[in-house]
Length: 306
Image 1 (spheres, rainbow, N blue to C red):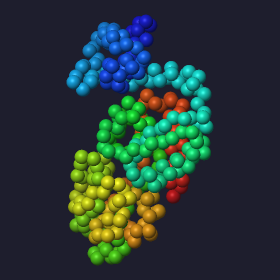
Image 2 (cartoon, rainbow, N blue to C red; image 1 turned 180 degrees about the vertical axis):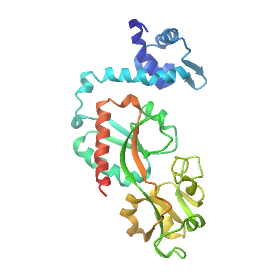
Image 3 (spheres, helix red, strand yellow; image 1 turned 45 degrees about the vertical axis):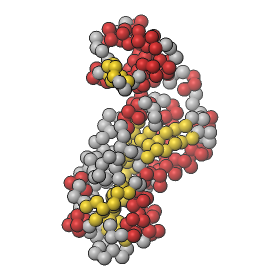
Image 4 (cartoon, helix red, strand yellow; image 1 turned 135 degrees about the vertical axis):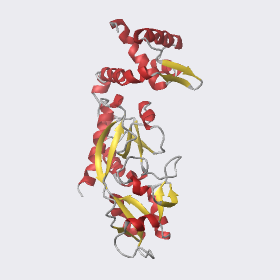
């Protein structure tokens, strides 16, 4: 690539992220014909089509996908050298941050984060969206949200991540369950009982299945009688039925006494859950994004003390 071609890099990044020439032109503040001319020059430079037009926008070629992270990072690094980025001050920040998270974190990490931000960045706001099993990589790349807070799994390997806390699964049932009268449950009892699970978008297997967990073979054998749309919706269902459920220990500790529930020791479920935040590599050096990540780490600290 010649020095004169370096000016094409922001155009490449905008097209890749917007997946639409018209939107890329609007984002860059140039005409669509100028974008088309840049694309032709890019194709000559890389000796590849790069972007294939379709009825629903454009599709990047494998080569475009391969070079995108490097080019996007270079554009970001240059942008963050500008004064408006270098002089980031939380107390003056007025932007809205977007976070996609499993509902359980609305009772642990996120309330702590809100308390911190209300003091350190009182002019900023946060919009939390539920995880819906959508393409989180695309959502983060397009900056539709800033962070995803999720259980570490084999589904998000293309994203940058940082661990926040560790948790464990606990089996819950109602205190007066007719069969589970002790303080433990065997693997055979676990399989025979009916279960409440946290539903997963477009799947009937429940949230925990398909994430590469070591205990997945056991989880896949459950007889699921009820799929709840959130973690907290599972608790009253377990209270009113003979169904049992798996919930994170840190949530159980807060709410078990309020819902007439008890924990059962399950020696066959010993794998800890690693909770992490995920983001797209193009946001790594953004000062406001880096600050947000630091706040999430701080919010999770108290849950790592137990």
